[in-house]
Image (cartoon, rainbow, N blue to C red; front, side, top):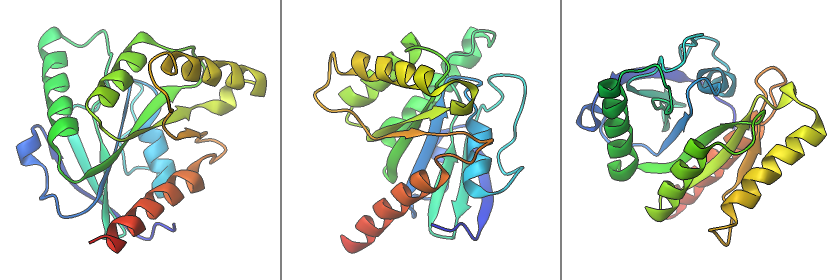
Length: 202
């Protein structure tokens, strides 16, 4: 897929404020500071489409971007930022969970995982929650250029092993690096394939 147009549409504090569900939607989320905004900018080829901050937990709303006038890329609030107040974290959780569970045109959730670390409890619990609620998702390992090939294999294998304790099958997995542009074509091809399937079954 070649991205010709990437347009910011709006930021929504609640599910009811989101744009009408008239296009397929692919949402990105993950623990705070996992590199979500950088990955979105890399995928779209727009350096400043999603705001990048050195402060974890900066994204607090549901942000919609219309891609090629045919599908939405959605930047969701991250989870697990310890310095946010309890009230703010509850609101983030409520907003994000309502979106994930009730957004009718959500096709797939991209769960971003920092490849430099072994399985994190928040990530594993979140993916188990998605599985129990039958929310389609894929695993996206970020910052893979920050560690050796063996270290990457070790950490990704740990995640697979952890999930296979409870599941028979694993979701699709993508390895990404913003600096090396790794994973861009694979993720965009995955989205394009899903969009074609949806069109053929209308």
